[in-house]
Length: 125
Image 1: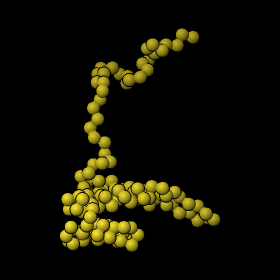
Image 2: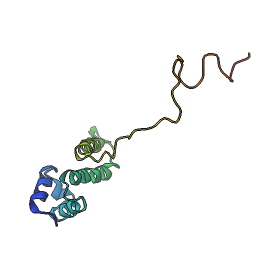
Image 3: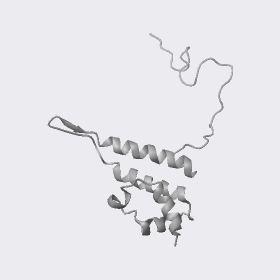
Image 4: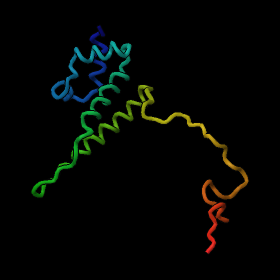
């Protein structure tokens, strides 16, 4: 079981409403900490990953002159997920190094695709 100091450090990085509105109480935080090898940053990342999943279905609501942009809540959670992704070193949302299948042609002024002369697809009309 995770130590109370580690649980308290995780709670310092979570929103204050977490215990009331989510399942993230001391017991659950301790379980997630144990699964992450007591890594506080990965545990906070897991919180935001779950939060983004929970908020992904929200849409904006407009009714009788009042509007509630609920998708902003999802966007803010996504921003926090990206932040904790970088802090924790998860790099789950970044693209790794992609190797090109074909080498770039050097010395030619035109990119891949249709060439100015038309190639095999020359108009004959």
